[in-house]
Length: 77
Image (tube, rainbow, N blue to C red; front, side, top):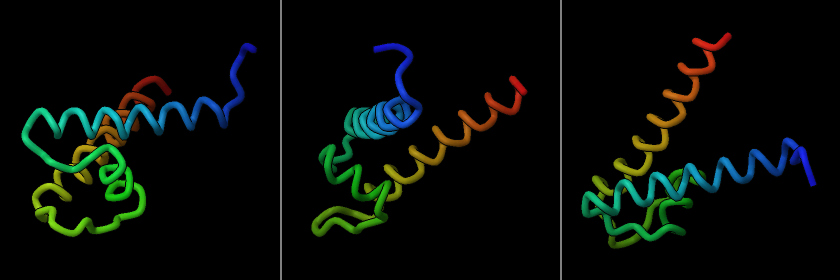
């Protein structure tokens, strides 16, 4: 069914953003799981047994993606 509803597109984009953050951080040695990454980024939940560095890597990466998207939208407008 095309075009996809705006809400469906937003959910897909959100899921891909979390997966991008997870995979990018995993490559660098971060041990958060995909689910933990989602909780840290979206709920700001602290995960027991994980370092502050790992939490901040996930949060900062997600915020960097948001910033880049915002800048692109500003340039297009």
